[in-house]
View 1: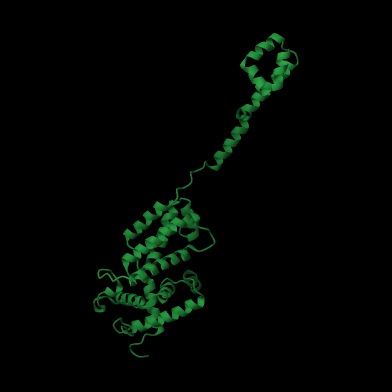
View 2: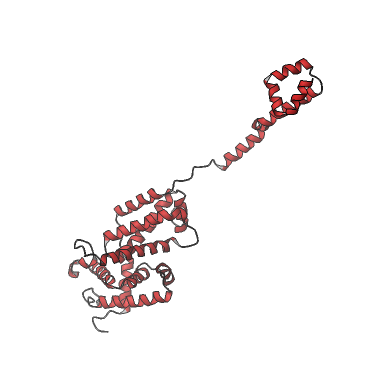
Length: 194
Length: 121
């Protein structure tokens, strides 16, 4: 749904955060509407779990609200800072998950219904989620940020604390891993037919 | 390419389609996010009067002049009185009466040198 134009629609995240810290309720609404879906989407794709993604996204946003009064303009972009916090929180979750037995009731992508029971788009989305989940952590982070969030390599390098060359290398390896994972389901997913 | 291989173009299409349909948070999550934002937001600074009000206040003070500066008016009155007394217009009994009044005490408080003068006349 297209949002109606208002004074906040063209303001930068940084400007809105300054206004938020000054008590502007319009800036608060604009930031929530703009940032919450982005943070949730990244967390959802990295964790593969709706419930965990909500918890991580909520945590990351609360950290932003807390730091807002001390935010120093020009030092970092709000989106970069928020992606970094979100990725780190996801990493913590994934590491803890490795140390714990899987919850059979959780909505991990691996519990998705068989491919035959779903529409093709949903099948492909679920297959991609499973393939992403199979990648090593760093490769998954880079592929999500580069190809699903559309960030540039330099921005990803800043978020993850890597060189641009390392990001490029991780992206290439991540894509090779995805192709290998998806290849086995290629005909079931309808590739080659379209 | 073998039937089971996936090429770069297919993977790019796959990723592009996924990017176009990001997972979306539900309304309950958005409501919680909004509640958090409001709960942590610092209060707005108290509103200041508009600039035209500040200008009107300054003009009013200029117009009132001495009313806005009562200390200056009192000092001027006291100095005038002291000049009158020192010129000999007051006789000694009037000076004694003056010494016992509040005005006399105020004069001595503000102009200590005048205390000795009033006692002399």
